[in-house]
Amino acid sequence: MPENMEAEPTRKLSTIVFTDIVGYSEMMNRDENQAMKVLEFHDRIAGEIFTSNYGQIIKKLGDGILAVFSSVKDAYTAVKMFGEEIKEFNTAKPSNHRLLVRTGIHVGSVLYRDGDIFGNDVNVAARLQQICVPGGVCLSQSAHSKLGQTFDAEFKIISNVKLKNIAENYTVSMLPSIYPDEYPIEKLSAIENEHSNIVIKSITKIPPEKFSFVDALIVSVGLMIVLDFAIVNALVYISEITFNAAILKLSNIWMLFYNIIFIAIFTVSLLRDAVEIKFEDVRGADKLLSYIIQRFGFKSPVKKGDQIVFKPTFYNLFMWSTQKMRVAINGNYVTISGSFLFLRKVKKMLKSYQK
Image (cartoon, rainbow, N blue to C red; front, side):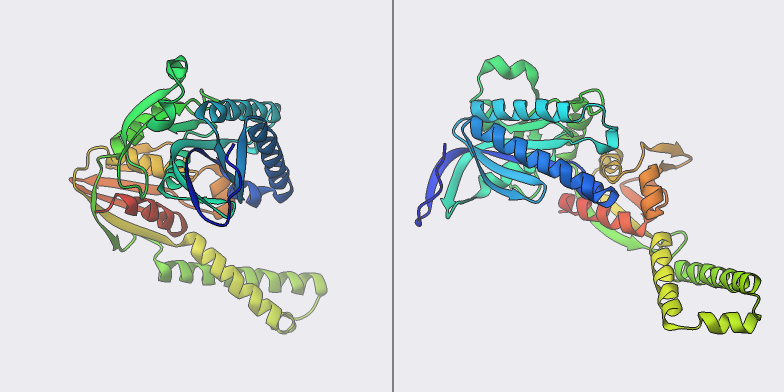
C-alpha cells in the first residue's frame, strides 16, 4: 500500500480510485439529516473496505473519495464489496432515498507530496467516474488490462471515449450498475460513443419565445399586487378595520422586504432563455441533448410537431417551478428554449463540445 509521503515529492505507478455520490446536492436540499446519515455510512464503509483491501484513502472530497491501491485487483475487489454493502444499505428504501455511487479506476504515474497525490492520471480517474451509470464502475484500459481475462465477461467495452478536459480519447470498460435494470449500460454507452465525434461550432443567445426578463418581472409584480390586495382584504374582514388602515398596517419595512423577495423568486422561476447551436454535423445531436437535459431531472423527450419536448419531473416542478425544455432541429442548427436556471447548466455542459 502506498505510504504517506516524505517532504520531497516522489512518483509511483498507482491504481487510483475516485468515488462520488450520485445526486448528493439534491439529497441535501431535500433532507439534510438524511443526507448526512448517507454520507456518514458512505465514508465509514468505504474506509473499512478500502483499508482491508490494501487501499489508502488520500482525501475526502465532499461526497467523494480519492484513494490509491497497491493493485487493480485489490481496488476491484474493494469496489465490488463496497457496491454490495451499498445495496444492502438501500434495502427497503424508496428510490429517491437510495445511496448510489459512481466509481472510476485508473492506473497511472502519480506524484505523491505531503500526503496528497497529483498528476494528469488523477484527473483521468475523476473523469472516468463522471461518465459511469449510477451505481456503476468505469475502468480505463490500463486498469482493465491488469485484471486478466477472468473478469472480461462482466464489462462493456467502449472505445474512443472523450473525457472532459483530457486531450486523448480512452477505451473504457464499464461495470454494470448495482441496479442494472434501472440504469442499463447499453443506453449510456451508445450515447457516449456517439458523443465523441460531435462538434459544436457556435452557441448563440437568442430572444426566448415568451417570458423574457421584462415579461417575467411584469407578471411577478402583478401577482404580488393581487396577493397584497388579498391580504389587505383579509385584514379588513378579520380585524374589522378600514381598508386604508389595513394598508397602513402593512406599509412597513418587513412587508417591503417580503414583496421584493417574492418578486425576485417568482421572476427567476418564470424567466426563460433560448440559444441557437450550430453543429458541424447534426447527427447524434438529439441524443446528446436528451442525455444532458435528462441529467438535470427532466423526463424522457416527447415529439410534438417539429419540437422535442422535455417535461420536468415532479421534484423539479415542485422545488424549482421549472417549465418544459423545448428543442427544435433545423438543418445543422438546433434551438433550445427553457427555464433560465436549467438552460444555464445545459449550455455549460455543451461548451465542452465547442471547438
